[in-house]
Amino acid sequence: MSLHQAHAEDDESPMISVKRITMETAVVIAHNAVLACRKEGIQVSVTVVDRAGDTQVAFRDVLAPTVSLTISEQKARAALSFNAPTSALEGRFKNHGSVAKVDGLIFSAGGMPIQAAGLILGGVGVSGAPSGELDEKCAKAGLDAILDELEMAD
Image 1 (tube, rainbow, N blue to C red):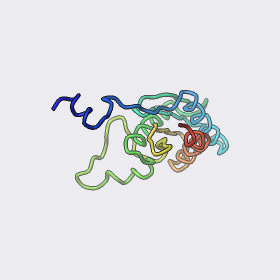
Image 2: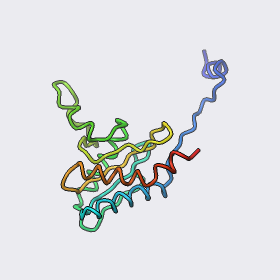
Image 3: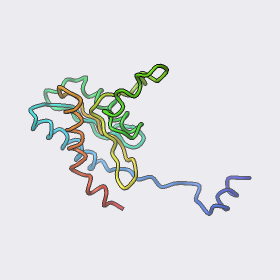
Image 4: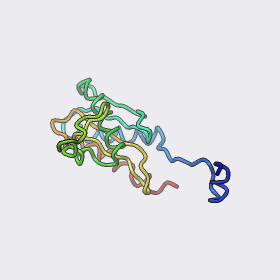
């Protein structure tokens, strides 16, 4: 059976449409995550990755450690890759025979998938707070700032 025959039988296109967040949306998420951490008296780094795991926006507040930018990116990518908050992944790879480390991913709290209307659209990662729980609280605040708009988008 050829590709054409397979698609003709299913009456489907050989291509799919993919929803992506805009750069402006990514900026709103990152900015609001930074502001949430500033309210806690903490300066952090925030990275928003698109659905392919590529960095779309990265912010490092003035006093945030330089390394926090790399960590925020890897948390965002892990949340996207596993479609779960990274806090839920922390203990997942500690059992005998499980994957303990994957290059480019960090499995500690502070990463959240960007989901709306049943779709995974990317990930956001925060690093630099004294705890991963606070990193995640700020990431969630960034998402909450735009979630209604994402849910209402067509």
